[in-house]
Image (cartoon, rainbow, N blue to C red; front, side, top):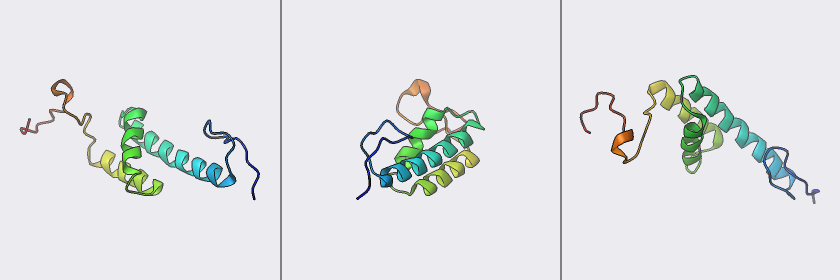
Length: 94
């Protein structure tokens, strides 16, 4: 049985070594995606949000690779229903 400790990466307390390793790994991958997005002026919070959604269907490494693909293909600044924030990049579908 491993000794329980506080996570040096997140505010979680009383966790195992397994949590600490996983948390460090996930944080590193998310940060990498955020930094890649930042090269194109994408806010870290937007990149982290997309990365988190991808994390439900992909590994952390795959989520980071997918974010890189999205950025390389052309990031759509806003996805949603607010007409005032919708991207208008020449798409006539509205």
